[in-house]
Amino acid sequence: MTAAPQAAPAAGHRAEPHHRTDGGRAAAPVLEVRSLDVTLHTPGGRALHVLHGVGLAIDAGECLGVVGESGSGKSVLARTVLGVHPRTTRVTAGGQVLLNGEDLLTAAPTRRAELLGTGVAMVHQDPMTSLNPVVRIADQVTEALTARRRLSRRARRETAAALLAAVDVPDPARRARAYPHELSGGLRQRVGIAAALAGSPALLLADEPTTALDVTVQRTVLDLLDRHREERGLATLLITHDIGLLYGRARRIAVMYGGRIVETGPTGAVTEYPAHPYTAALLRSVPRVTGPLRRTLPAVPGSPPDLSLPIPGCPFAPRCERAEPVCTAEAPPVHRAGPGRTASCHFPLTPPHPSPHPLEKTVTTAENAA
Image 1: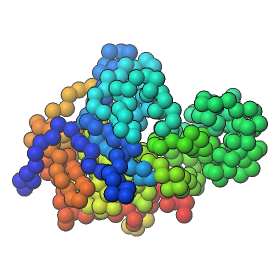
Image 2: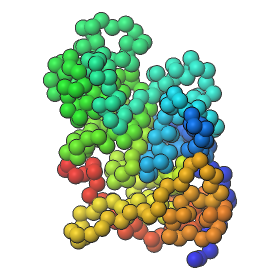
Image 3: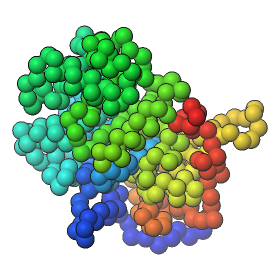
Image 4: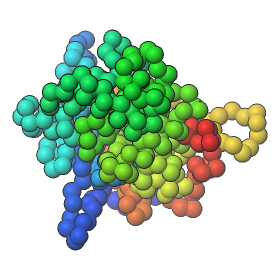
């Protein structure tokens, strides 16, 4: 093994400085997460250290993709931004979650509810479970509006129909009077998007928004999210386990493993020249169009770490083919892996080590419907 590149150790993965300029003035990100640590205390007495030093930032109109296996901490990150956790679980959090410069973790409960109610919306993974089965579509789509002002039944239906039309729901006036079980999965997810957009949020959290959908409608839903992000200037956090979904949609990627961000950078650079071994392993597991028809799809060996146990070194070390003794003993430093790129690794991959399967040459969930 060659000597590791020199870098200063870091306690956590900080967000890259990422600020827009508008007329010469710096503009802060819509969402900025700084050194976020989250521990979940279960009713059984277990303490799960789910997030460690997480940092990221999203500008208005930008899509940041967060990718990783189940258990990497992606959904807990979204729930921490929203302040929504299981009622039976006690949560302790440190660091900052800044929404337009205001810290959601330290804000008074009334102010936090106001910030979240007007500034943040979420598109859930399964529209059948996120929608109330006994409430008509019109009432669910306009819930964010009726929480702030009274609307007559007629006004709710007309407003709901307009929102449904904006997300390309056919015959929106009739669908506004329907119940969720009367719609297909794709239409239910469009209803969820319409409800999320109703309050004109600044930040949209999309947690695995196409997982429950047929492959033939996944691209349509993702294109819809892209269109409204561009038209409305939405800052979007797109969470997925499928790195292929992010190609051509997210401008930047944050790769999570074991509750940590292990690599960040522009989507094209990260997928073409991964700097962290875990990112390279994810890319190898993406199905490809080219190559033999009969072949075994590579998988990352081993299992994710037990978050109830301390991890003194790199959480990926037990599964990493490049691991050395230092990897299990010491936390990895954060290296600069290129312009706007970082990787938390003792022995990061460096060019010329291209991805074995660049995403533009693979079969991705988003492109299967093309």
